[in-house]
Image (tube, rainbow, N blue to C red; front, side):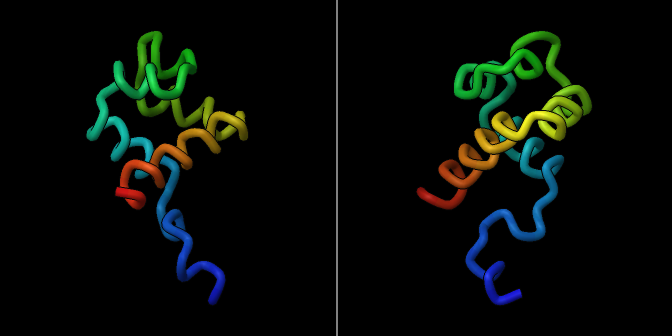
Length: 73
């Protein structure tokens, strides 16, 4: 438990992370920053979550952007 104290993703669901990023950037900017089809072609939270849950490299990019956006300001 002690390890998680400094983890900015601790307690955050992937859905919450994605919603915050979409609210902050919008789909167009998010698709520009992370070029994946589920952000650029008919984007939705549900389709993006399905893709991110199956694709570790994409999820990692989303988590990195979240940390850069909200914790490294």
